[in-house]
Length: 156
Image 1 (cartoon, rainbow, N blue to C red):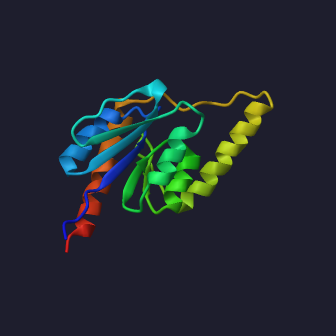
Image 2: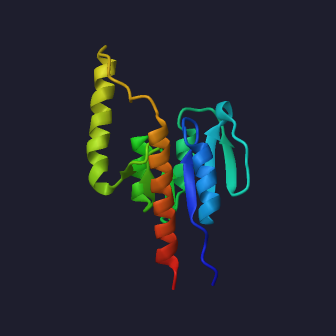
Image 3: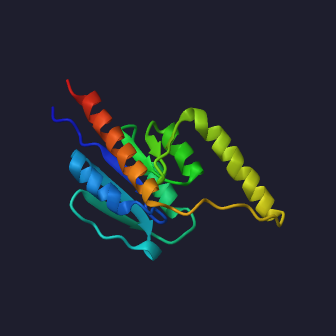
C-alpha cells in the first residue's frame, strides 16, 4: 500500500504565509488545500489545490471543518477553527509558527471571548504586532518539522 501524502489545509483568506506553504509542501512531498472566499482569489500551482467558497461569514471555516482529517496540518489564526481542527485530530499551526495543542486551546478561546466582550462594550483592544520576516521563517521551519515528522512516523 502506498502511503498517502501529508496535507496542509489552509484558512487562506487572511493567511500571510501562502508562498511559504507552497514551497514547503513541494520540498516535503506533501500537498496543500487552500480554502478562501471569492474576495480572496488564489491561484492553484503544483502541489496546491485551491477551493473557493462563497463570501458568507463562515463559509471557509465550514468547508475546512468538514474537510479536515487526522493526518492533516491546519494553518489558521482563527482559534475557533483551530479548536475544530484539534477535535478532528489535526495538527494546528498559526501563520506565526506557533503550534496550538489541546492544552492551549481553552485559554486562547477564553482570551478571544474576553477581547470580543471588551470591544462590544466600547473598549479598544490591542491587535497583533506587525508580521515580520522572522515570523515567516519560524512558520516555515515549524511546518517543515511537522511534515517531516509525519513522514517519518508513516515509514514501516
